[in-house]
Structures are given as C-alpha cells and as structure tokens.
Image 1 (cartoon, rainbow, N blue to C red):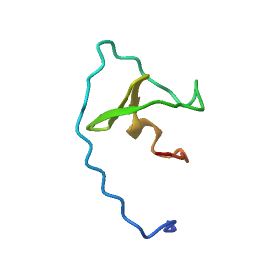
Image 2 (cartoon, rainbow, N blue to C red; image 1 turned 60 degrees about the vertical axis):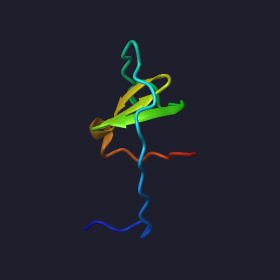
Image 3 (cartoon, helix red, strand yellow; image 1 turned 135 degrees about the vertical axis):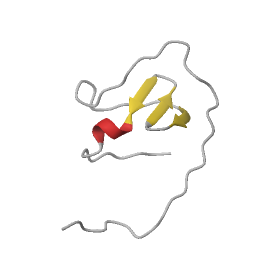
Image 4 (cartoon, rainbow, N blue to C red; image 1 turned 180 degrees about the vertical axis):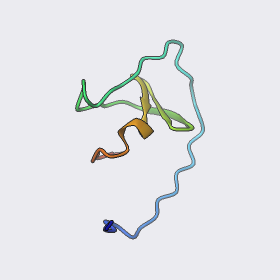
Length: 67
C-alpha cells in the first residue's frame, strides 16, 4: 500500500502573475533538471519563466521542489 512520507499539509495559493507570450513545454524525460521562477499555476500546469510544465503528466515521478 501507499506510505505517508510527511504528515504536514502545505497550502499553496499562487495567482498567475504573468502568462507566457509563447508556450514552451518542459519535459523531465528530455531535461531532468528544470529550474525557473514560478509565475503561476493554472489547472495542472505550472507556469515558469522558462516554460510550462504539465505536472499531471509526471505524476509518478519523484521530484524535489525548492523555494
């Protein structure tokens, strides 16, 4: 079964500060390390200053976010 890694809940309220003028998709398979400034969250998409990441596509990946 599933194992709880951390009992802490983190609530994120993040408005979209800026939409990209040109959408560039980011992909962990092609670029394992993605670094950028979070500009907003829209549905399943993280909008970064370097591109857009469809987070649902990588649901089974183990990632580390730093802020």
